[in-house]
Length: 491
Image 1 (cartoon, one colour):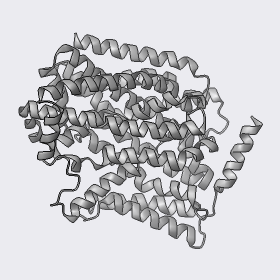
Image 2 (cartoon, rainbow, N blue to C red):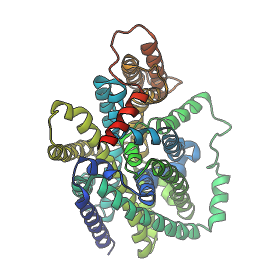
Image 3 (cartoon, rainbow, N blue to C red):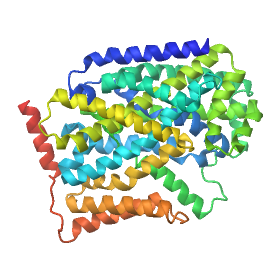
Image 4 (cartoon, one colour):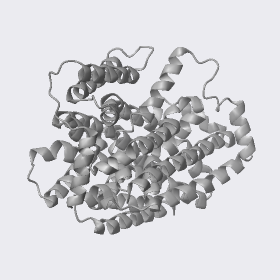
């Protein structure tokens, strides 16, 4: 019966996505839903996209093992990212009237920086997207009692997401996100009440977690290396996920700039609150069923992500299984669809399109869909060959944009003297430093991603303040806003 429900749920999701696809009449509809989403849909897209597989399965299991000290990136850094993006960039992005975040780098710094940062952004999505596909495959694999091989299950899950995303783009993402948000909230709250009750009630679970030190964000025995590691994880999410196309798309899909700001802030607050429900469920599960701790001993780091699926399938009644897996599938599908669309938009608009400058809107829409299928294939290969947890995969993904796109974004938006040379130096020094220390000199006190961030800042300052070798190819923010306002008036 449970497998039948899952198949029915996936079918309904596909139908909703295909229904929404009828609203797609051009590239603007496909990428930013015609810039027309009302507040409630905007909030739903922010929440549902960020509330993904790693939140339900991986972050919750990491908390059960290591406590808050083990998860500074998500939900803490992730929530900070959304608030910062809303308060610092939402109005600017909306007023510039751009299709992708890569367009910002093109306007501000020129073609070379646009391509470099866009490639960094696209590469960063491999880890995040692969995490969602891995989770979707894990659900199918578990529900089939192992009859379906994990890799085959990952391929099956990817096919479901691909079907409705490739046709409907952001409209399909928005409609399915709204539906999936309701399922996530209702399903997880119901399961939390049941699992918490089996563990002795809310008060007992919280008291036990406190007694075990799970709420010690900064344990007294933390050494310098632990502090730096925590900082690296936090900044990877808080800063590295700001220059991302999915954040940009949700803000610029709103019906107006006020909705863009409010929707992102409310979505961030909603995400932060509900992210603690899976944490509570996972720890309550360990209290009620201590045998699940055996998963922590596995050589495969991904094994701890089975705590909740194994508990629900082995100990919960059918109605709870339906609610949990409905919520889990909703979390995965909503994030996966956005994670596929975002890099597709950036790569097609900012890397491929310039080579075919006279492309019609219809041809561009076709190219977007072809790119979406291609990126899905790459993410599948990554997912089937990685043994990292979903939390680790997402954190590593954000290190690319932390070191290669964050500083040029902030400097381009708020520093008048930022120029093309500064941005080029920033990207090359930032990513280069991170790669060198991450792969060849890993045993440093300061994490490689923070060293890369520092190098990126130095590169921006040196390039922008020293004599010009690479001429400036971009516009000032004031000039870009003026052109955007003029274009809007003309249209």
